[in-house]
Image (tube, rainbow, N blue to C red; front, side, top):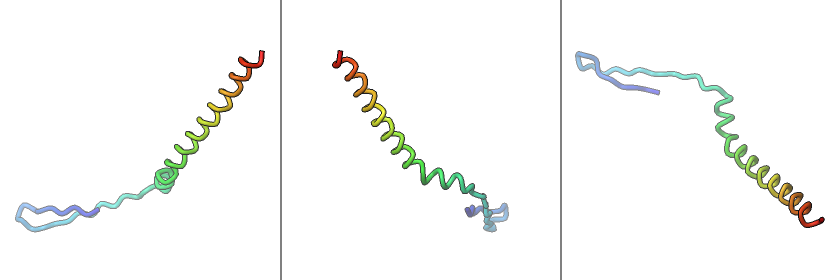
Length: 61
């Protein structure tokens, strides 16, 4: 990133800030929506299986 500023004598100056980005941060940023989608699907499937088992145990006897 580049930041422009003025010195006391009104000369223009610039500062460059370099930051090393972790490859894990970029990977997790890309995979986060997929992870949330998988967790929602897993929750729906688990809810369906438990609902089926509980309903079957109530209706069968």
